[in-house]
Image 1 (cartoon, rainbow, N blue to C red):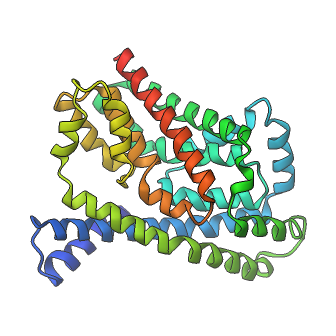
Image 2: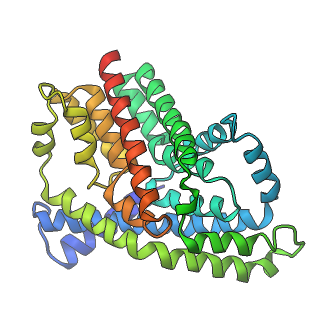
Length: 324
């Protein structure tokens, strides 16, 4: 059975190369092909996740969960549980945002919700399998642990910095409205109109930014040559790790898609830690993600989020370089 990506790839092949008659070797054709696959796949995931979270938050005793997570906030257990949840969900950074919105809607503490949002795109089951085959179980295990630790620490730090006040106002309003119906006994059909209304409200906020973000990411994907990254993040550059993180920010690549680039970079002599820092930033700290986050976070929180996680990724890159 064909995967969704394979089906979308065939659709993109037909639209770009057959219907429009663009060449596979053309930069514009490559960018458009990438955009059609990426945008369609993300929108499908976002729609599914948005409605799924609407159903979950409608039925689950979110008040009890919130109380439990808040009770364990100081110990960090709530952050660990959220990061582990992120590690077992196969979502990219943009499609993780509806889940983040659902957590905020349920009034789960910001730091805990951010722990999920940070770890979810970084640790991907398919990517782990490919990573294992390419680099062995030790490197894979350290990468998974580093992704979870980054989520836990990042969430705790941002919570301690008092960033909760910088969540978008419309999400706070969703949370306020939600508290009135958490303990009702309505049937699914009775809940469905409200679930649908809230899902549509979230989608209207997110999809335009996904479109803009993917357009930018597709342009860079098609027009910026891979040799550019190989030149400026080589082993001889002592600033290669932070530079790799900065260079990856304009990109939008999921954990599976970036692995061939990582393998190529390593094959060209780029240190493994530098390549992994690039990988982390491209899937968990991208500019397209920032555009989507702009609808759910205020500027100060986005800046703090990127700064905190970026520093963590740089540290992870240097640690990998020291170990391997």
